[in-house]
Figure 1 (spheres, helix red, strand yellow):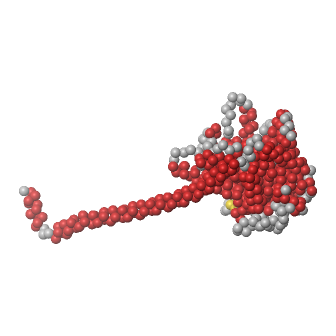
Figure 2 (cartoon, one colour):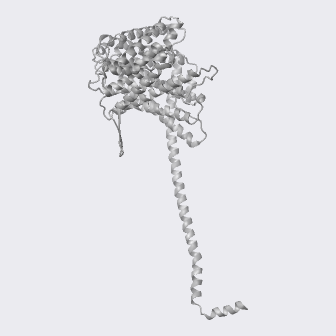
Figure 3 (cartoon, one colour):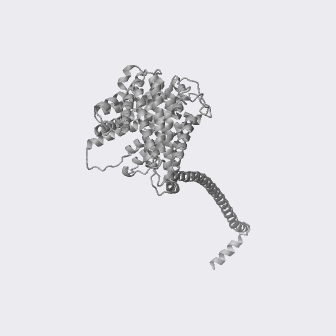
Length: 567
């Protein structure tokens, strides 16, 4: 009942032309009927889905970073079965990008219909419930009745999610070539996902079917990014005619899925897909950022900054996907069985940008739900843009490491994917640490601000409800470990604040010592210069007196002196 009532929070007033609502303002009602009565419920469900995925990813990134940097925190996590539950929660939120992209496409180009509303409601509730149940399953005692009940509820949530996806397939079609092609592609993705959920719920053991679903999942993984690019084109250029559908990358991706299943983008279809992706990405970027140049000046203009940032992120995602497809083609052409199996820099770049598809959709959602923002709301509106900047920096560092001759088989990265090369130079080491800290602040802080901007109440309610359920169902040992982890987190935050204050104090003392040394050196130099001038004056005084005496002596003296010299 909590999830069904909770699903209608964001659907109130979330249409592309609806009046703004303050991100901290509570909704009018918390009933399911309010979600079904909204004109464009897709925006509300997209916000909730993206909050679940990006919020979960941000928390996991923070936990991984803390586990790597704090031995005491890592020791507190030892002995807990949290890794399987985290993997299950990640699997539960895996379909979020495709579902959020479908919701945004329907909100922008399709008329609201009952099947779309009901499908979004059921699938969103199932995703949130599945993630919460996966996390709760990690704290329930293994082999107990509670663990069995949580497992059954998890399978039921998967079946309900498959039912919601099936309903979305029969929703109304949008208008415009870009959105229509993207919608058809997303419906195929939803069908494949629903088949996977059904196979998991009924424990269907069919190796060929499972292999086919995995291959289709791998090929269609870029579908949410292509849908985001189609939305950007629709926002910047408007709806296109059906002639433009022949150049849409969604069409070529469908052809690749149908004709070359598992070929990894090889063949003419893969080449045409990469070309269409490049054209679509550049067209979206050209619609958001205008460059005017002449012999006298170069001007760069953009409309909405968030759409411009989303277009830049889309270009990055498409560029990495194109480069990965080309590299995969070259590798498959070689066909060397004895080649060493190493992780290439391009695969690492793909792993870094893989979660950024949801970030792209979140930026489009934030642009739609907050067309106008006050000064107070700007950090929440552009939080995802900060996170996108962090992704750009991560990819740039990886490319720079590869261009400087770094070994692809041993690329050192931290817990969030930032390259951290080992160097013996103190200045270079400090610079890299500063860059890593900046990337961490931009990524984690941007995700937090952006998720709060999408809806404060839904984020707090979902987080508090999940944490409360985990604590209530946990065993005594689990609660004790939770207390220890909370203590370590508090101590870590205090230690970080203390370290920052200590570093600032030491830096201030070092700066003061440097200034004092510079002043002392300047005074010493001035004193030496003054002493040198005084010594020169003392040395020149007797010579001046001797010269004056010689000038005043009689001429006969010289003769006498000459005679003496002759003698």
